[in-house]
Each structure stands twice: as structure tokens, then as C-alpha cells.
Figure 1 (cartoon, rainbow, N blue to C red):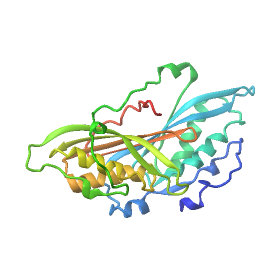
Figure 2: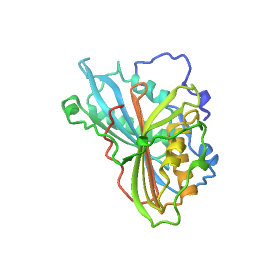
Figure 3: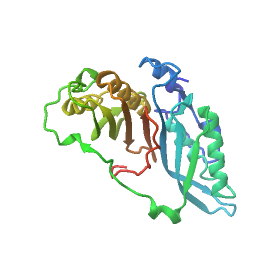
Figure 4: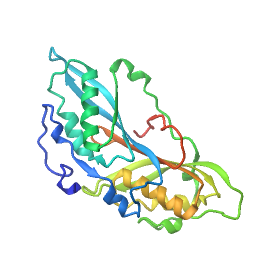
Length: 274
């Protein structure tokens, strides 16, 4: 479905009675076709969502709250449009449920049906809020570099690698990734981690490339996949993982992870900006 047909960027009536029809799917394939991707994807991964504004009523009418973690596989046919998810979660607010497990099961069923593949949902109760960890992405910080930058539209030609040098394994991090919502134009802010094995990637060019997303419009998932594909094409690593932690909007943060080698999902530790 076209994101311009979604609730995103439109005046909205907030329904406080549970309604799964508020969820709006966005097909991944049209966006991927723009990058030359076919049905067989060159990466694995998932989109890790965190929801901080989930509340409902227990059977006695007392409000309950929880944090929700939602994991949507990268190979699902659809992703969920973010504002529609906010509206969907808001529809729980004045609805009575027997337990948090009922909420978790219902969310899992609704999101799996929407995305076309099993979606994992877990809830953290207030009793466990103090255990929710916070940590910055590990790796060598590219932002330490002092350099001139002039390009603020995506420029993959800025990427290069030292193919005449021995292969290395390296993890690089930047907090300077910014892109813009393709419907509302609102800025999206993120920290990004790039883990690779192969010819050494030229650091200054990589930082300039990441900053070149600053005026680009694209969904979080699409930006991370394009970064992955541009790095594969221009730098040809044998192993590559790209992970972005986006700051929250509307009580939601989205954290896409893409990799071409077998490894577990990141541990979902939120950063200071989240």
C-alpha cells in the first residue's frame, strides 16, 4: 500500500478501544526494487521496535502499563507504518484485558497477520523497568575525524576501501546519521554501527557517506538496507553487518539490523539518545 494512503501525516482521531484495523502495512519489495534487490535477499536480519506508550485496563478498570519489544523479520513481505502502530497501541488504552499475556498474544497475532510472517512480541512489566539496560554502540567512533563535508544527498561514490592492503575485521560507529520521513518530512536521527571483514574501509569517506543521508527521504529500514548495499558494492567486504538505533518518535523507536553472515540479533540495549 502507498504510505500516502496511511494515517501518517494526517489529522487523526485517537481511538481508545482496541482496533487491529488501525494497523497499516507497507510492502517492502517496491522500495527494494529501487535498489536492484530481487526476491532472494543478500542479507538476513530484523527490525527491532520498542514501544514505550503501551497501556490498557485490567478487568477492574485499573490502568496497566508495559514496555513492548517487537521483532519483525527482515524478509517479511510487509513492514508496519509507524503512526499506524502508535494508533493501534493507543487503542488498547480504554480496553479491558485479563492479563499482559493476553496483550502480548494479541499483538503478536495482529502484527504477524499484517507483516505476513511470524512477529515476536515481548513485554516488560514495571517491576522490571530498572533492569532495562542502556549502552552506547561499541566500535571505533568515526565522528572523531575532523574533515570538510559538502555532500548532503546520498553519494555512494564517497565510499572506498584499500584493496591493496590485508583484510581486517573492524567495527565502526557514528552518531551523525540523519534522514527524513518520506511522507511528513520530519527528521529521523540515529546512531549506526558497521561491522565488517575485508579490505580496510576508508574512514573519512565512510563518514562523509553517512552524513550524505542528511537531506535524504526514506524509511528507517530502507536507509539501513541502502547503506548495506552501497557498502557491499563499493567496498566488497566478505562479511558485513549494519545496525541503526533511531531515536524515538511517538513513543516508538525502530532499530533495523541487516547482516550477510550468521550471528544473533543485537541485544537491544538502548542508547542515551533513545
